[in-house]
Image (cartoon, rainbow, N blue to C red; front, side):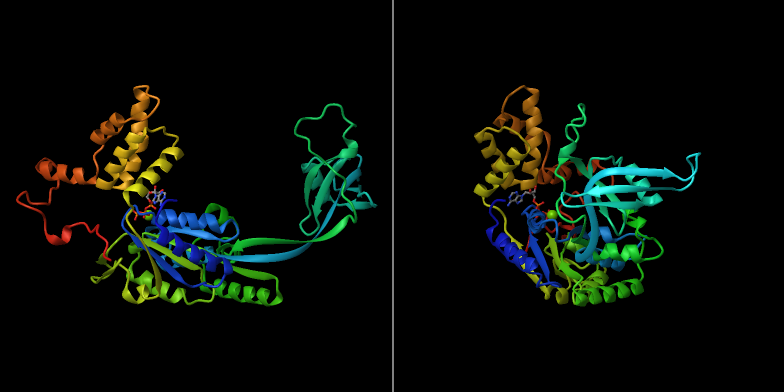
Length: 429
Ligand SMILES: Nc1ncnc2c1ncn2[C@@H]1O[C@H](COP(=O)(O)OP(=O)(O)OP(=O)(O)O)[C@@H](O)[C@H]1O
Ligand SMILES: [Mg+2]
């Protein structure tokens, strides 16, 4: 990323405290004009946090749905952003298959099967009795003598790790996909600690009897009863005391926060005080505007009592040099070769219109340059697309000039419309 140093430093500090797991329940607001990189910074934070810390991104408008109340949708987003790291000890068996013997109980070959399997490590060899379930599992994995396998004792799941090196010469023709591994050492049975992280929401869904875990895959989770959540919170508190689970507070990013209404804000007020709350990061490009659901106006459309709880990071407009650098990065990313003069012209366009508009011109100018078989995008291509696609200002001007020809024209031709209808694009300091 380019420039925006203050905001990025602030974001860096927030990241540090998130990683230490200390500031669950805090909320951060990123405020700034459109196109100043608010969403980009939030995405950068998500990447920096890595896989293990849950990061949920929603746009504030997403929570308005007919299927679910808005507070339920917010609650689910909250709980999706809290990870539970669960430690489990399981017993596994790992070894090389020496022999598999399967007996059929009757001559017809139907009916339950039983059998024996000999497994070995470099140090020992044991014969195991096989039940029907195990035989099926082995069959599914196409396990043969000479394979190194891994069996999870609790679930009975069989995983084929590869073929043993010692058997490498038994077959002349092996496919390219065969992986050879060493025969394991030591005991056949081992205890292993495995750690997995699931989100609180996933636990909720699995435990809500109506839907069951299949809802996780269909995405249709419905509303979850408060009692279920209560029970789960208790269970997790128990696990924590026993040292079986650990809470990983993650991040919930709510973009376009001004789309939330007054009810959501008061819900957030309360929800942030919960012991199991993530860090909430919000972004808005609105100045003083109406709070949705009321007739009051307030900064960013956020009620003052809620605003008071937030740490506010403001993003500033970019300087010309920074814009140029951002455009160059974009060119690289889109694999567009652009002459330096063309980049200069584009920078000029960006300062006069907007960064987003200039970014859109990159790929379109590339297409125009391709069409005239030029190896690089030149000034003339930028000029061409600048005349083909109009920006917001020119669009407004155009509408003002030709408004009489359009349907549903509300602005009187005599002059600008009423003060209230003006778009608020300016941000107040
Ligand atoms: N510092 C930066 N470095 C590199 N690219 C940037 C930077 N800031 C913004 N951009 C690019 O500019 C574009 C607009 O940024 P972004 O979407 O983050 O704006 P925003 O602040 O979220 O605007 P809005 O309020 O309209 O949502 C994106 O394509 C982003 O990649
Ligand atoms: Mg944005």
